[in-house]
Length: 166
Image (cartoon, rainbow, N blue to C red; front, side, top):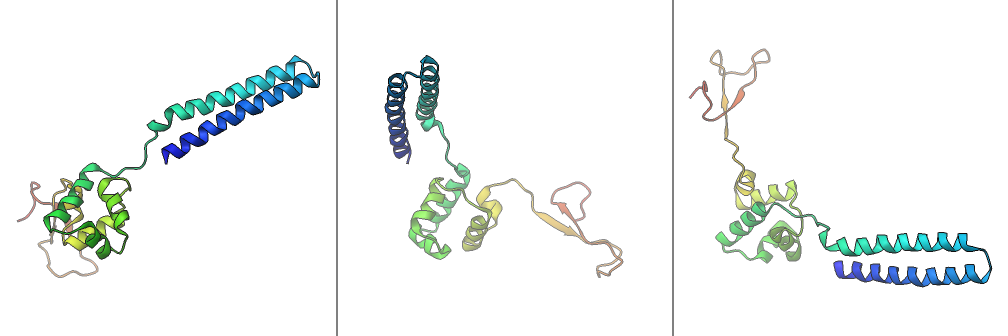
């Protein structure tokens, strides 16, 4: 992809140079004076400079990449279960090439795909993303274990927090 862009930029630079010479010859041939010739040369030089800068920076452009940790985790999960990329891709309803793009980080992993992978491997999304989120537990108010319209809803408190009822 980057090679094709480089070729296009080089062709555009060449075309601008040729077009600049043609414009200069026309301006000189029609005796329009030096002002239009200078303006034409300056415009062409600026455009050529912009194209050259683009050509020099083409390798610095970043493509979207997924979190390397997530890439590694989905590959580990697949290998741990001794599955091929084709098998996982087919189970998820996608082409193997697309699945490999997720695994290698060439495509960004969406939340929907994370949910599908978690469901497929029967694990939580946190296991894939390796977040340090503590599991939540539900605390029921001591006044009543039966929920009514007037009673407050259960409160979720992170496990291990001080003051949490056991």
